[in-house]
Length: 160
Image (cartoon, rainbow, N blue to C red; front, side, top):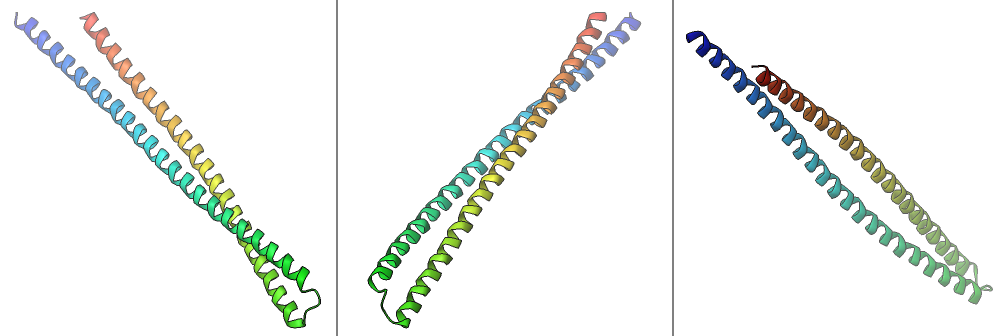
């Protein structure tokens, strides 16, 4: 009877350890799920920020393009009306052309920045997808480990 009591106590202790292991694994799975949710939220926030910046840059680009178009229209009118004017007027026109060129360069820079931001956004999205896949794999591995541990516990319990 004492031997049977000792065996029962050993089995109870083994069951307790296995239940503790399963609880620990379940905790890891929950932490992994939480981390995935946090990463998703961070990606959504980052994506929203990039979209906001893109909208702002697009608006700025449109305003500068409109300004360039307006300046080009004004320049053409000045050229048509003042073909025969003095050298001083020619210098003024040349100054306007220089301003237009500068604005066009600025517009071009903004367009390049916008393209760069799009590329960075795509890269960030790809990195998130990669991290997400890694977290899923890690989560699946933890679930598999938990499942195996549970199977081993059930097998031990079934054997006893």
